[in-house]
Amino acid sequence: MKVKSQLPNMLTYLNLTLGLLAIVFIISEQYVFSALVIILAAFMDRFDGKLARMLDVESEFGKELDSLCDLISFGVAPAILMWSFHMTSMGVWGFAVVALFAISGAYRLAFFNITEFDGFYMGIPITLCGGIVAVMTLYSANYTTNIYVLGFIMLLLSYAMVSKRIRLRKR
Image (cartoon, rainbow, N blue to C red; front, side):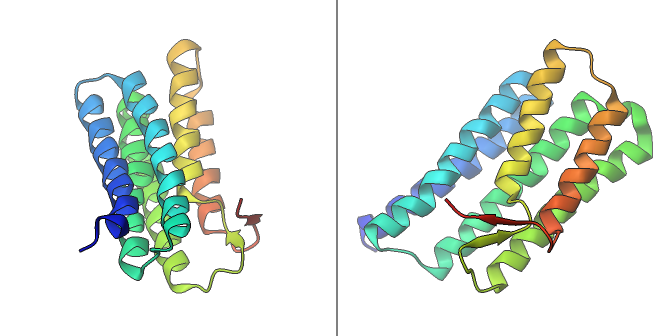
């Protein structure tokens, strides 16, 4: 295996490691650190694909690996973060909201992997939605926030990830 071809995957593995670290911070009830680590993971995700294209080492393996890691860092970790920090008081409804967020992210990533990419994202990327959840957490750590509003935003983000009507140009 050439080192050059593995460099983008190293950023992807770092993305995954940061997603796992975000979950560890949640377990330790360090929600702000968890949110910050999710945002840092988003930067890693932004650069792994760019690096692969720059080095001309794009591969199906890298694409699949990226999706698996993204599900942890931007689907599962933000869902657990929102559940632990806010939604536990909503009981089963809160859990349903965060589960739907993670499920929508998984669907979006799987759909993206089997769709021919035409320069536009169909639906909002999971990285952006997970980042928004992290920013919502940072905001709500400093300001009083209605958990029902947060839940509603989580539902909107879930819809936005799977919507076929939303198209965003890749930059």
